[in-house]
Image (cartoon, rainbow, N blue to C red; front, side):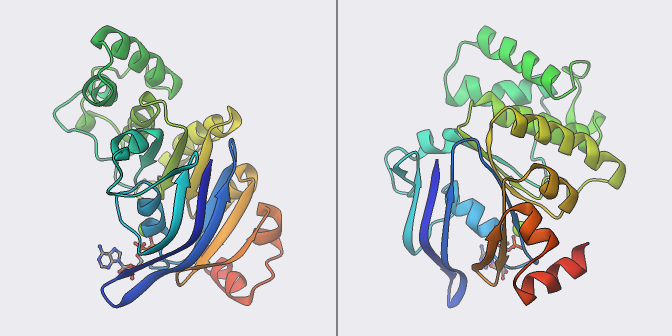
Length: 240
Ligand code: ADP
Ligand code: MG
């Protein structure tokens, strides 16, 4: 589904990704862990072509991801992205936020987009909040709207960048629960998270990124419970 081959990326003289190779199969859930500044967000942004990379190759369903690609908008609709900050349109209701992409980007008929948006908001547990504005919703509810908005584009995969890091602790569970459901339904997911419980339970694979390189990769059980690398152990000591 997603193939990343020896990707390098620098900001000015500062190398941030130093040769990332990672393959994500259809239906797989991969959790990416690593300290702040290790390059996790940059990698996700490269996959979604929000950021360019210097060398190597990223392909999505065998199509090369490049910012200059003629297919860039189509590629972007195929990979959803959920950020730490929900980035909802503040002056639109939950329903309008979810309809926005299908209507304006995919040019779906309004009625169809509306029906699907209502269904998706029910799916994330917000069937009662269709007409609420973001400021009337809790952080956890806003993040669930953001997930519904991403799903509305019918992506082939979704990238999550610390989707629960900005939430009060009591709101983390409801968001993870929606993500768990998606994972169980077979959605292909790459998740940057510090929620080790979630990773242990849901991830097919865990990758540990350190200073721009994936230095350990394996099953959640192996990486989180018996890491081979001293640097992974060191990192886990700080987050667990
Ligand atoms: P993480 O998500 O793992 O915390 P990031 O990918 O956000 O790491 O950042 C990796 C490194 O790249 C950091 O040192 C950060 O300061 C730097 N960086 C990220 N984005 C930019 C940018 N747009 N311009 C310059 N440096 C950046
Ligand atoms: Mg980040």
